[in-house]
Image (cartoon, rainbow, N blue to C red; front, side):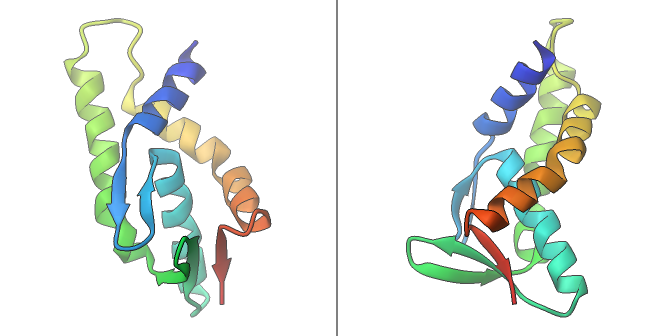
Length: 114
């Protein structure tokens, strides 16, 4: 049940990054960590949008990504329910699924590093 709540929370939190379009929390996590690794290699990360490949950096998405994580933390603090998803649960979920999500995004042609 906790995994379902985490998945639901990650798809409810939305943000927009220039022309990259609106994405969910798990997509934001994927984009941020993909770009961070790509930028460390001295390359540029690109997201495939309706307008073609758009360059972006980890710093482009960090503030929005951080904001979404903060909203999850605030929601868990304000929830009176014992069944709420904690910030720790969310971060653990994102960390455990990150490599798989990055790999899937690359193989589906959504992200590339050049």
